[in-house]
Image (cartoon, helix red, strand yellow):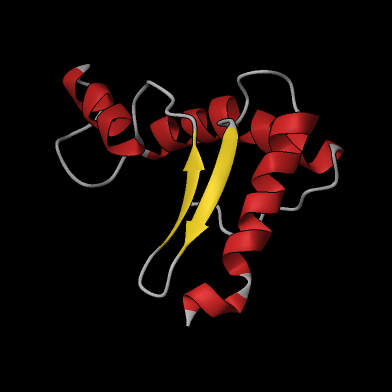
Length: 102
């Protein structure tokens, strides 16, 4: 099961390492993790802001794309280049390689 796989501890360790290694406000503060026979959770700081769906909806409201589940290529490239690549660069600089970027 997931609770027995060690994934939770591994992810918690990486999150804690990133928080200590990267500039402030780059990743949420790791606060601990919890595991029982039924549940598993990583506890971290709540960061205010928009999720990807809200960002997409804001771009739709600006009229730069049509209402759909997909962004125009130009908008997706902007979000990738402006938001994700700087974070990935910082993560690589401290020795963390991403594996599941969506």
